[in-house]
Length: 405
Image 1 (tube, rainbow, N blue to C red):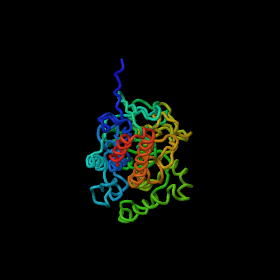
Image 2 (cartoon, rainbow, N blue to C red):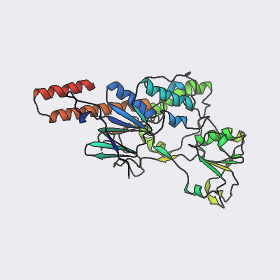
Image 3 (spheres, one colour):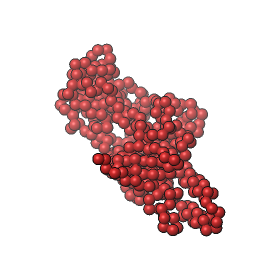
Image 4 (tube, rainbow, N blue to C red):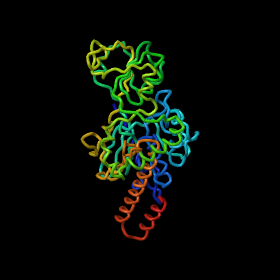
């Protein structure tokens, strides 16, 4: 027998002047407690808008905490802080993933943001004018929902990966933590993006490392040089934030290509891989006799495979007609016009090329929070117009509007 579902109305605990539950004060539900969700929460808290943040991880910051041990950000601390709280490190330093995780946790505590951890959302649907958010045995009702996460959450591996021999140790990059997870012997890294390059450099010297994948270019300056730390970061932020945006002709023209293109290597260059002894090999196209098969017919006698093959779309749990043929949300700067009260934030190029980065999330978060507040007041006004016109009802409604300001 299935366990009963606990129904939590978004406005539970919110009462009107007579102490009765007020359906008009249902909270906004923010799905995702990473930098995007916390940033929206910061602004809603300032505005006095009731909300809850639901996050699947046991702790705030776990999305960063669970990455590989040696990971450092590409962005200096100067551009890593969220609204209202600068990152607590030297401004020209590159924070570690654990520093970032702890910062997000302290951010939520600093502003007393209502995060419910360990709540994995299974579905978002709509009943009448309200959204229904299901998470295990819990069901939340809300007037507004903010989906605060990136496009790509589901790790991708090719179908033929399951045909590799059982003696080959396979990991996806999201599972990789450090070299101790690997068996003695050679390592094949599939994917030549930033994750693959960083992991290859870490393993070179400890293992024979082979890398399969197509290069997508690299940043022409060393990001850890004085120029990179103090000047390049400012240039990149200006271009990503202000030039490559929907507010400029070049941004609108380039958006489609940038949405589907690959990011250049940032910290590691192809020359670094060569100097470290990483062998570049052809594309992996299948499996032969339990071994990776390369384009051209070569098979690899390898002990470990790390799939640095990225992540796929992950919005199958959103049961609403808001996606295009490629599975991307249809929105205008994060606002879903076809379904009032539904928003996205944290998407790649939501408004600019900086939208899914720490240096750009704050602007989009404020824009969405402003829209949430405006929609809340629109609904309050609509409810007010439907009420009887007696002076007692007018005073009661105005008192509730004033309390939310």
